[in-house]
Image (cartoon, rainbow, N blue to C red; front, side, top):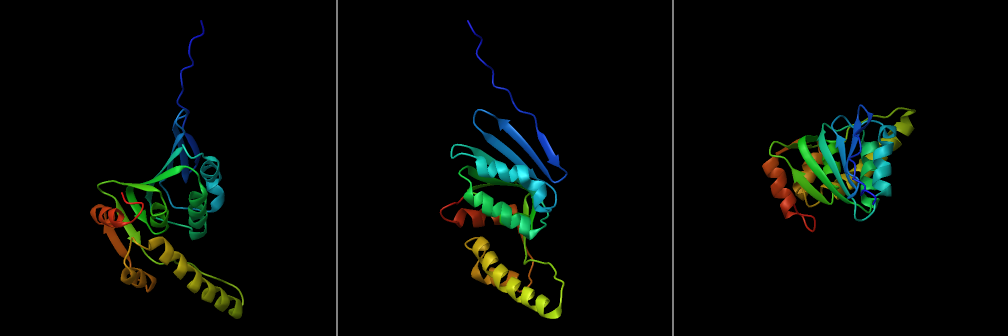
Length: 191
């Protein structure tokens, strides 16, 4: 008689200094992704993005955030890939969730907020270079593009007035209780 195969827990994979992947149960296909450092250039997140892309509808992905933000282009790729994933994605605020990390948090299908979590919502920052007319065109494009992007992500989480204040330069700080209150009012996701 053959002995039944015992499921084994796979080892944690440290992708790089910016991303760690820890599959916690091979049978149920639960993946825990830790974004606990600044969001850097996209090439650091290849394995993370591939998990999001290849996950099936019964899979669960938990994105753990303790992060001060970072590259908006990378953040947008992560959000786009999350939106295209078949898996159920829970974003978990476990400390700081500032700047670009707040955009990732709000893009989850479900949320877990720790008692001491904080969030910072602010408008993008960046720069440009080139000839004068190129820089002016780039700035004008960014001004319109990012305004629409921020309104779409923060819609229902922030009030229209708060969104406009953030776009005008206000930094909006929220504690866990304020975040939870706002997430509960969001439909259909809720908390």
